[in-house]
Image (cartoon, rainbow, N blue to C red):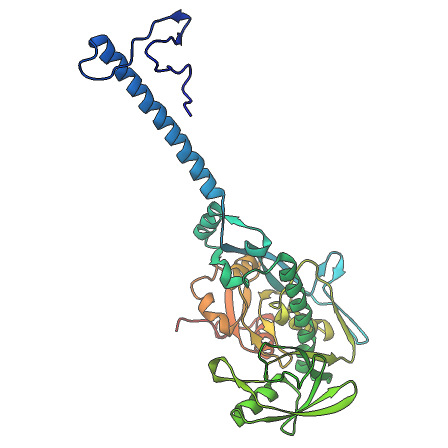
Length: 396
C-alpha cells in the first residue's frame, strides 16, 4: 500500500496538489531515449521519493518489530530479593509463633526467615527487557523456566504445592525443635501416594502407616533407606497399619537414580505433639523457612533470649531429625537479609557453591548442616564471642 500523500497515478498524464498550484505531469519516463532533461529530472525525483518512502516504511517496521520483540514474553524466571519475617515477631498483628499447653517466653532480637520474589512461569510472563535488566542486577538471578517449574504447571497448582510444602515445613520444624529440646513426641511415616511403575503397586495404599521393615521399627525415613541399601534389592518384609489392622507384605524394590533402591512410595510424617505450636504467616509458601521456624520455636519455648537481641537471618529446609537441607534463591535471600539489617546469615552447607561470590558486604555467612549447628552459631553471637571461627562457605 502506498502511504505517500497525493500519489501520482502513473497513467501518462495526471495532476498532484502542491501548495494550491496545479501542474501537468509529464508522461512516465520509460527509457533513455524517451524524453529530454525535464523527463529525466522528474523521474529521478520520483525515484528518490520512492526510496525515501520505502526507507520510512522499513524504519517504522523495524521500530515496531523491535518494540514487539522486547515486549514479548520469554521462557525465563527472574528471582529477586523478597521480604523478611522475624519468627520472634508478628505478622498481620499476630505472633508468627505462638505456643499453648506449654510455657512460653517473649524473646528479643531477630531470627528472620528470608524469601524470594519469583516472576515468570506460572506467576506471569517476563519480557525480554525485564530479563535483561535482571541479568544486569547483581541482586537478581535469571533462570530458564524449565529449571524452576515442571512443564505445563498452572499457577493454581504451583500455589497449592507451595502451600503444602509450607505446612510440611512447619510440622517438621516443630518436631526438630522438640527433638533439640529433648521433649518426646509421636512420629509415624504415612504413605501419601505411589509413583508410576511403583514396586509397591497393589501392595501398599495411600494412608498406610509404616510399622516395620525387615523386623526393624520404622521411626524415620532413614530406617527404610538404610535397610533397602543393606539388602541390595532383596525382597523387603514390610508391615503397615491399615484402618487399625496390621498388614504384612513383601516388596521387591526397584533401582532408581544414583543406584538407590526404592519402594516407589511418597511418604509424609504424621506427628503427635505434647502441646500446640501455631505458626501464623500469610502469603508465604515453600519449605525453605523450616530451620528458622525451628530456631524461633526453641527461643519461644525456653526462657531468655537465644539471640541476645542480635539480628540474625537464615534459610534452609528442616527434617524432623534436625538435618538442614538446601533451598533455592539463596543469593537473593542474602541480599534481602542484609538490606533489613541482619549481620549474621545461616546457610545450608549444601548451598555453599551458590553462596561463594554472592555475599553482600557486611554480612557474615555461617554454613550449617543441622539445627544444632545453627543454634550453636546463634548462641555464640548472642554471647558476644568471636564468630570468625564459625564454619564458612569456601570454594572447592
